[in-house]
Length: 133
Image (cartoon, one colour):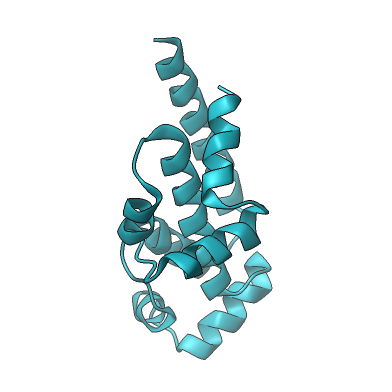
C-alpha cells in the first residue's frame, strides 16, 4: 500500500511539473508536446506532428527548438526514453518488449539512445533502480 501511495505521489508530482512547463510554451508547442505524450507508443514523425500543428515541418522544427531548447526529434526521443525508464522501474516487462512497444526498430539503437540520454544502459538502469527500492 505504501508503494501505491508513493507511485501516486510520484505521478502527481510529474503532472505538476508538466503543467508548470506547459505555461512556458506557446499553444502550438504545447499541442506538439501533448501529441508526443499521447502517442508515445506510436512511431512519431516530424511531418505527422506538423500536420497536427497545421504548420510546415521546417518552420515547426525551428519554433520548437527555439522555445524548448531541443529539436522536435530529440524531444520525441527523450520522451520515449522517459517512458522506457518508467516501464523499467515499475514493470517487469523485458527490455526487448519495452523497445518494441516504444517503436524502436532494433535493440542496439534503443540501448545506444537510452545510454546517450541517461548515461547507463537499460539493464544497468533497472538494476540500479531495483536496488534503490
